[in-house]
Image 1 (cartoon, helix red, strand yellow):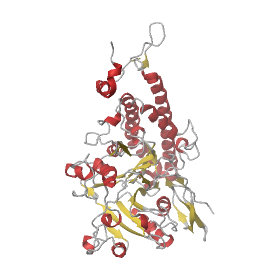
Image 2 (cartoon, helix red, strand yellow):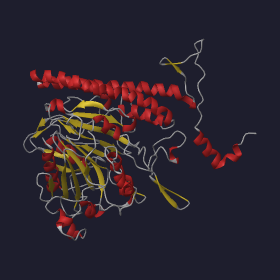
Image 3 (cartoon, rainbow, N blue to C red):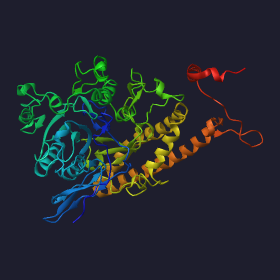
Image 4 (tube, one colour):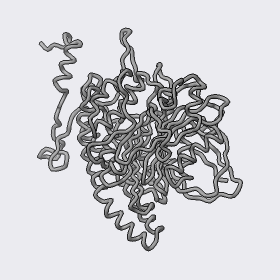
Length: 546
C-alpha cells in the first residue's frame, strides 16, 4: 500500500488575543467574466509555518482492499485510515489532470462544532478529492461523502471548487463531538460573475429549489434549529448568521479582502463602512458582475493588493515607516495607553507559503488546457510561473525536500524569493521598483509565450498525448528553474545596489565606475520630508543643529 502523507502546514482558525489569525484568500472568475473564456481562481496559502513547495501525486491504480492513511495537512498528525479507490488521477499542486482545482480559506465559526474524533481534515479533503474527481460537481460529492462516512476533523471552512466549465463555493462546518459528518452548502457562481472568500463564511441566502446551482446537506437548517442558532422559516435561513455570525474582525480583516478584489472591477463604495467593521450595514453579495472582462494577469495583480487607494491603504498610514512598507509584523492587534489598535490584513501578506492562480480552459484537451500559475512566498514579491496540470514532474526549485522552513537552500524557490522579499522590507519604496521591473519582464514573457506553447503541444497531442505531456513538462520545469535563477540574480543586484543605505549609481545597465575603474561614489538618498518631519515632531529638540 502506498502511504498518503501530506506534511504541509497551512493556517487554521486560531485564537489570538480574542481575534482570528486570518489566513488564505480565494478569488474566483467565471468563464464569461474572463477575457478568454477561462475559469480562473486563486489561492494564497498563508501561514507562519508553511514551507512553499509544489506537491504532485501521479495517477495510479490500487489493489482491492487497499487503505489510505489520512494525515492532517496542518500538523502532520495521523488521523486514521479510509478505503482507497481503485483508480486515482494525477495532481500537481491544487489542480488535477482533468482541470479540477480546489482551494480554501478557514472561517472557523462556532467552536463547539469542531469534532476532534473525525478523520477528514480540510487539507486531506482537498487533495483526496483532486485524486478522485473529474469535475467540480464530482469533487463536491467526494468531499461531502467522505465527511459523512468518516467524520470532519477541522473547523469551519470555505472551499473554492472549480473545473473548466464552472466554479463553486462550498462552506462546511462540523456538528461537534459525537456527531459524525458536517453541515454544508455549495453555490455555483454564475459564469458572468466574480466571487471571493477570505476566512469569513459568505453564503447567506440558499436557493433550496435550484438543484442545478445549489447543493446542501439535508439537515443544514434543522441542525441549526436544534442547536438554537436559527428559529425562522427555511426561506429566511442564512448559513453565515447560523454558523459564523459577523464580528468586527471577520469584517475588517476578512470581508475587507473580498471587497478589495470586488472594487477593482465594479463600484463597491456602498459597502466600505460594512467591511470597516460596521455589521449593521448591508452585507456584500456572494458574487458580483464585473464591469469589464478579467484576465489571469488581473487576478495575479489582485493577489498583490494592500488596499492601495482606499481608506485602509497600508502604504499611506504611519505604520509604513520611512520606506512606505505595506507590511505589519504580527500580532495584528496592539494596545497603547489602554487603547486598542489594529493592523490591516490585506490580500498580500508576508507569511505566504505558496500562491496560485489556476486557469482552466475548456476549448483545449485537458492535457493542455489546465495551467497552474504558481509562485512561492508573498504574491507581491513573487513570480507566477506557468505549470501545466498534465506535467510529469515537479521543478527542482519547487520540489518537496529541497530545503524546509528550518533549512536554507540556494536552489529552493521559496528561499530565494524570501531572501529578496526580506531585503525589500528594509528599503521597500526603492527596491519594489526594481522588483516590479523583473517581475513584469518574466510574467509578461510567459503570457506572450503561452499561445505558441499551446499550439506546439496541440500538434504533438494529435500524434501522441504522452509526447505533448513530456513537452509541457519540459516547458513548465525549465521556466520555473530559469525564473528562480533570475530572481537570485535580482537578489545579488539589490544587495550590491542598496548596501548600507546608499544607492549605487548606474549607467547603461551597469553599476557606474569612475575613470580609473573604481566604484563611483554612491547616492545618499536619506529619507523623504514626511519622515524627517515625523522625527522632529516626536523628539527633534535634541537633534537641532547649531
